[in-house]
Length: 245
Image 1 (spheres, rainbow, N blue to C red):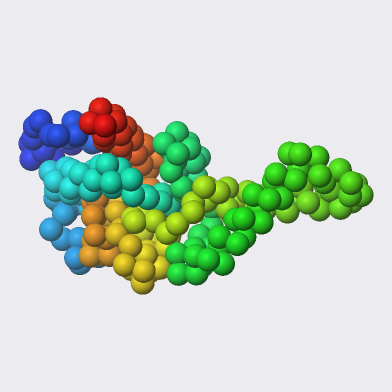
Image 2 (tube, one colour; image 1 turned 60 degrees about the vertical axis):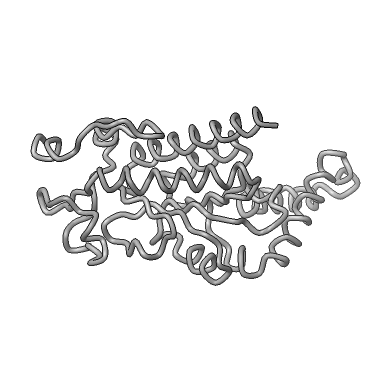
């Protein structure tokens, strides 16, 4: 796509955000023009084959601000919750969050996770207690049929609350990979005045996020690029924070 490359200039950034790498990862591909949100106009470079093309220079600008904010969260020991429930993102979200010991939701968002936090915490506590009982052999005293029921319940609880087991207080910010798919999470965060970092594709209102990242929210390569850069930023902040102590 030479016509786009002419407009996307390589330049040194604080987080080594490379436009050529971003193009290879497909961050610039938006949705069809028929699905475009009018407020995304400032972030759209043009159209190709009825697909909106995102201006990667704008992406770099906004992504840097988001990464700076994430590093601030890390240095202040604040909580970042990662949310990504679309099928192609589930494993990516889980691996990323577990590598960094972050809370996450990669299955269906449970209504009230933020707005009814105490109730969710009670379910998490029950899940952890049941898990511990299985580990210590306390469930062996039950019948085979009852143990099968407990195991089924544990699998269900793991899907719902596995990423929230060490989530003991409401997050200071959430990072949402698909603002449309996880619109309830976005709505709850706004209700609780929790900061929102969000990947904003061309069908999304960028005003929904405090720190929007204009980019393709469907392609796995795009999500991988964004999360890899986020991981680098978090690890750097942790390393620098530790060296100052």
